[in-house]
Image (spheres, rainbow, N blue to C red):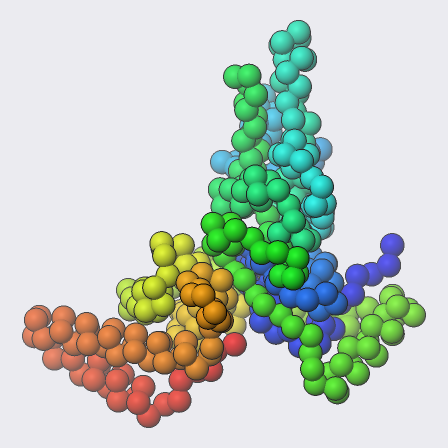
Length: 380
């Protein structure tokens, strides 16, 4: 089987690539929806990301690829096996790329319980579905807007909870279903309902690259890959390996990344200033900021990380008025961030005034002065 097109060889589309990388670092962010016209490397980039991901330890012979180091999240069969035998056999494998067809039914997605066997023989038999195959892997859904809404709901519920529960006639079976969810769609073929759109953590709108030099490079690289996939991959192997190692380091660094109440206030001020409904966006921005700090090698998040999180989490959640574009402009986002910073400093100053904390007042005043002198970090 030929090598997939290298992720690092994709020309441009930096926002899409960053969203995918951050979800690979922390799948609990909640998935990426990539909206764009045909021929903009949506599926190619998703497949390239899966090839970058490291090998993982799994329970040998487990149909769901359970993590032997996380006994709390074992499937029903592995839990019973652990109780019976005391230990679980372990092996390693590559992270899987699982493709969900548009025609997939509910049973094909979640799996089925054999009721007849349960009644006649008293045995619980579960036939795994796509969610079982995707556990601890990457689930790719092309043309997600053409899927049945109920199936999309099932996918998003499993992605959020990290578990798939199947119940039939009083018999239940559950298994872990934690995966990186990547959906792609062409808006010309119809959009997702707002309720489903909001459930995707990130949404990225991409267009074909208009710069002639970049388009020439895209054609050159693609033709070189088509003529010799193995040779082309070898040319990018070092960069692929480097990015793979950076993602692995970021995954390990992720639990150590911290944030402050001020960071949460900045996020809350941003979302409220854009009149975003609910609180999902706030949580997504914070998780994204933490993952971005881990990727860039830091143990504390900053305004740059929050801006990246907002760029990915807010555009598809903005309220759209008739004849009004709901896109989010970087300059607009930067202005809201600066206002949030002023409000945060004012809150801290008032707290310091009430407590008589001169040191804290001096710190807040100095930060405000430095903020006025230093150009803010540009969003992605």
